[in-house]
Length: 146
Image 1: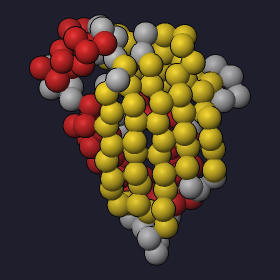
Image 2: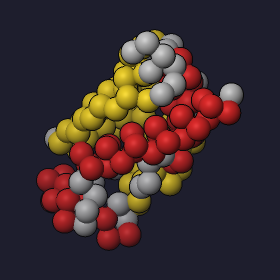
Image 3: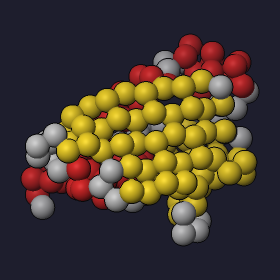
Image 4: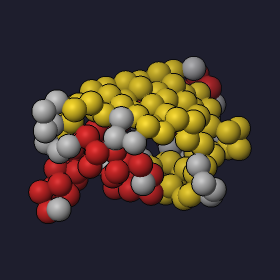
C-alpha cells in the first residue's frame, strides 16, 4: 500500500477551508484526476478518478471522523477497485489555515498500478501537491468573494 502527504498554508480561516473541503463534490474542481464525487448516503461518497492508460478507478468511501473546522478522515468501504484511507487537517495560523493531507492507497493493479501511475506522471505525491495548490487558489478566491 502506498502513501502520500503534503502541507500548504492558505490565506483563509480554517472554518472556510473546512467548509469547502467538507462538500466533497467540490473536490473535482481542485483534483485534476478526480472526475466525479457523488454523495450516496449521509457519510458515503462514490469517487470516479481518471487513471493511467485511460482507465477509470471507482470506489466508495465513508467519512470516519468529522471535526468541524479541524479534521475530516475517510476510508474506502470495499465497494470499488481502490483501497484508500486518510485525513485532512485544518490548523489556525492567525487568520491563515495550515492544511495537512495524509493518505494511504492501494491502486487498481496493486504495485504494478502504482508503478504505471508514476511512469505516466500520475505520482501520488505530485497529485496531492497539485491538489493542495488548486485548493489554495480556489479557496483564497472564494474567501475574498465571501
